[in-house]
Image (cartoon, rainbow, N blue to C red):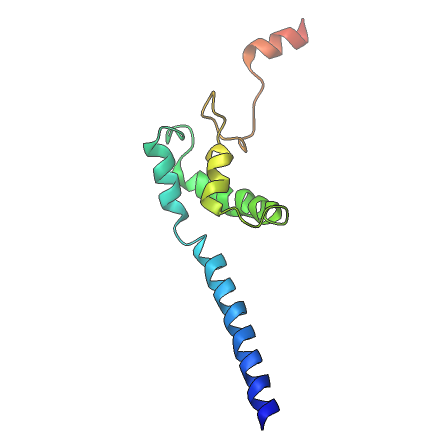
Length: 114
């Protein structure tokens, strides 16, 4: 009977540890739209250059998987901190999305054809 109680207690504790870990991980991604709004309010993202719908698509398809990979090296960082460190996916000098496909500038085309 004593072994049963100890085994049940260990299973309960293990279940709680696993369950709370899943909740914390899921909470990181519940309000990412507000992170975009925060970056716009802080003049980090220009919504004319990087609309919210495009940012949310890139956030799910590229930023979030990159963050999950980064957590293998630094598990203490939060998603919000990681986004801030990565300037919310925009270049600091031009405010253009890092993930945006670039088209050659007119001046570069002239240089290549000259």
